[in-house]
Image (cartoon, rainbow over all chains, first blue to last red; front, side):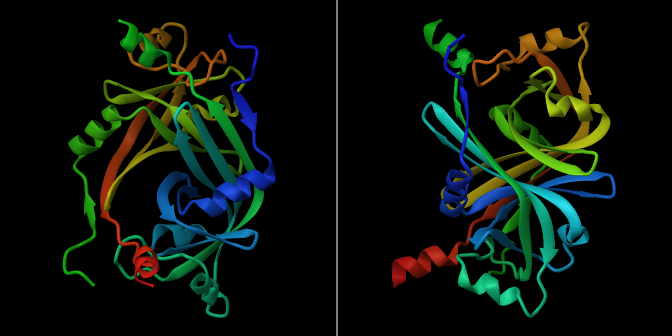
Length: 142
Length: 142
């Protein structure tokens, strides 16, 4: 109804700022024909994302060049923002896994997670939404 | 370090309670070899999830029986919870799309979104985490 678009594309710089400001998102990946999605703690390292995962986790089955997608989002009052990173996942070997020690990346739970996975982005996009939740107003006005 | 497991599996009933209490999540799906993830507004309808999408959206390219995964999560102090629904997406035709009118399902933004998609669950799982973010404590104690 509004003349103004309720969805605004974010610039790449805005997307990276939001990625650096957050520490929690969801990773989507496919194993054979099974679609998976899981919450993860992550950190930005240069132009990549890093996260840790348990040895033997399902996720490590996918890190041989398959495409993954990662999402973070944020709500503030009447607006929301969502950033999506499509990229390729790679299990870092011993020579590189020290990179995880230089960023604020820790397992959120106290289990021993130590494999390090890097996501090298193919595409980074973000959108801001003006939220229009008519059913909330309907309830208030009833 | 703790003897108590920091991750607890939720029962199926707890998962559905959390699904009914929320209205926003993220849908993961694959088109050809491209992995996608997108935030969506949804509602529970019986033992299925419903959401609306724009005609011609990428998502409608996937709804012919392919597997999708949907996630919601929640943080409260030192604990977090995440529910994942793996299932099959189906574009509802005219005979069924009225189902979206009986649930609190509206587009969050004011654009004209009207195709209705159903997710029929294959598997519903949920986990609760006790968060252990050591770097926060490190900063506080420095």
